[in-house]
Structures are given as structure tokens and as C-alpha cells.
Length: 283
Ligand SMILES: [Zn+2]
Image 1 (cartoon, rainbow, N blue to C red):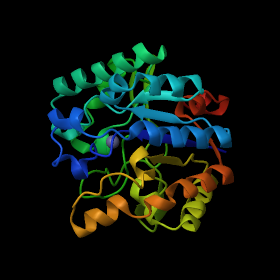
Image 2 (cartoon, protein in one colour; image 1 turned 120 degrees about the horizontal axis):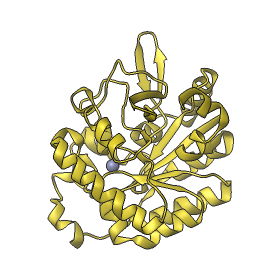
Image 3 (cartoon, protein in one colour; image 1 turned 45 degrees about the horizontal axis):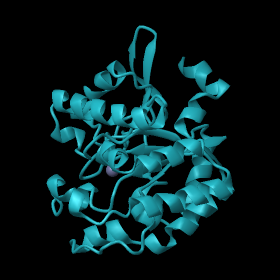
Image 4 (cartoon, rainbow, N blue to C red; image 1 turned 60 degrees about the horizontal axis):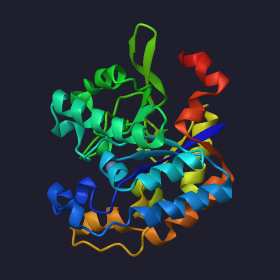
């Protein structure tokens, strides 16, 4: 069973939790750390011989075209994380369309390959923003991986399916939603395998969860951000809970990911969707 490896490529000053400190017109003046941290990940993936999907911000692609070229040359998939890291919940449909068009066109121009997928900043495809699927399908995307089937203060659709499903279908074209991985315990879904959940929960739990998920014939989707492997990033003053959520276990994260990569099979979304048994179910 193949699982899916994904990285949301953004800077340390882009996440929603810290964005209030860094208005977008100040981003160009900030110290950029994305390149050296993506390089660490590229080296790890190369040593483990795994392919991944990099959801890249249009802003990052424009600034570091070389990074996109490196990902593509190494056989990884480059998809979009939007242009300016704005939550879909904070945009009108017209603004979202414009933001998405901009990111797709810059990434395609650099990579020379068609962008097939999207991950919304802060998993902001929620009950009120499902209109975004129609725009994704119109712009030629084939999948979205933005729904978290949990309750959370910033995101989530607690009763969304836990498995990949057709979000929208128009004629012969389909948009597949790949929800973030959750363990179902009783009637509740518990997140695992990405971001803070990957850093905070013990590795033994994550390994157990991936195994359990695969036992249900579901691919686990691991996701992480380059800044989650960066022990040298500027430490910001956040509240106690935010600090814990944001910085906990960063120093051990690369080792953790390495163990997961060696213990299970991983690939990109694109390669996952190209498998025969997947296309039988969804095309
Ligand atoms: Zn993000």
C-alpha cells in the first residue's frame, strides 16, 4: 500500500499563526529560509528514494524558481498552495480564482509541467468554502487535498469522508478530494501524520495510525512544512499554546520523518493517482 508524502512550501513567516506579525508587503524584507530547508528534504527523499508532492506558494515559486526546477528534476510533483497564503475563508470566489490562476501560471511556467493539485492554506476548505472546488475544476485541477475531517478552531469538516472521494464532477472531468488522515476512535476522528500532529504525537502512535489506516485500505497522507525542520529560524513570541503547537519537537522532526519514510511506502499524489487500482475507482 502506497502512502502519500506532501510538503507545503512556505516560509517561517507565512503560517496563519504568525501572519498577523508579518503583513504581506513586508515579506520581501524578511530573511528567507525556505531554500535551505527544502534542500534538507530533497536530500532525505533522494536518500530514501521516495517521490513527494510539493505544494508551493506562487510567491515562493516567483522568488526561487531554481527550487521548483530542482524538485521537478528530481521527479517530484509540484502543485499549488495558492499564491499569497490567504485562507479561502478570507477570500471571495473572484479573489480565490485570481489567486489560484496566478499561482498555477507561475509554477507551470517554471516547472514546464501541468499543475494538477491544490492544498488550501490552513486547510481552509470548510463547509462555507466548498464553492472553491468548482473553480479548481474550471482551472484544470484534478485533485484537492485541503479538507480535515475533524473539529478544530481554525478549520475542519468533522463529518466529511475520511477516504478520497469525488468532490465534484462535470461531464468527464472529476475533482478528487484527498482528506487529511484521521483515526476513527468511537464516533470521533483524530488527526495524525502531519504538521503539529506529526511533531507532537510520539512516533510509535504515528506508525500505529499509518498501519491502521492502511488496514482500512486508505493511503495515509503525511504533510509538513520546511520551517518545521528548521532549528535556526527566528523564534517568535506567541502565546503558550501557540508556542507549543508551533515549535514543539522541530529538532527531532527530520529523524521522525526519515523513520516513517523507511518504514512505509510513499509517493506523490500524481503517482498515486496513476496507479491502476486508483484509476479504476475514480475515472
Ligand atoms: Zn501553508
